[in-house]
Length: 329
Image (tube, rainbow, N blue to C red):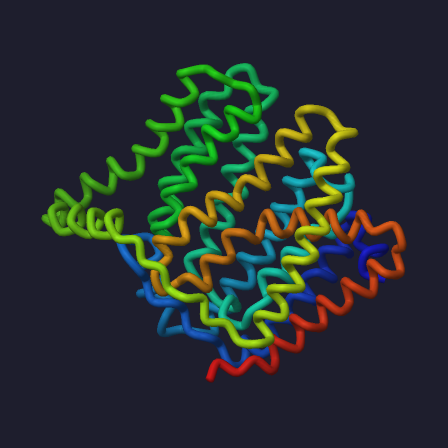
């Protein structure tokens, strides 16, 4: 039912995804969860937090719209670069469900913003594969890596996905490395000038030094239902990785390289968890673009479609029940 319906991509599919999202977010519209408190030097997220933390329902509405837009953009990215079945909207649905997997996520939080930024970076890097003059795209990838860190500090390490893309795409131009580096520096140059003019530069430098020198591992405190969803997701992801690694061998070198680039996001997410501090539960969202690709591949790769539909329905119902009966106490 679900998988068969979302194997195509028409406006009606995205309308249904919006309705399913509203179903998953239903309780949060009535009882909105709080926005997480900013951690570390994150000036852009602090702006949103200061404005929206006292307006929880508005925060939920904006967060939902942002997730809905990201679901569409990620699906466009996967389809455009042929990482999933062409003209399928299933990735949008999977992303919406994953982003609703915990009631804590059903509002605006730093990872909302960096997920959108990750999509932009991936799109820039993938477009650079077949473009002779790609310095603007590489510069943009570096720029958005730094911009994302102003919403969520651990996102600094996203810069390393750029040289990974150069290796995967067999590119060794020194000008690309320079463009990425200067793109990364640009937001911080403007930020440093602002802090200098407002006499905050010394304090902010000290804050950055403290964060960079501190590796703070906080245990991930999840409830039984969260662990159940997490284990289910992991099994499906490994299943999807099997299909993904087996399938791309029949595809072009370009599609294989782009597929592996998305999978490499897992390593960036794992390396940066040391800086996540008390936001470690939200840090898991960094994995969701890759998880979306893996789960979509799993559901599309299962030959017996009836079993695929049953597994998908169970997964959806687990998250739906969790969104309404989750108890933070």
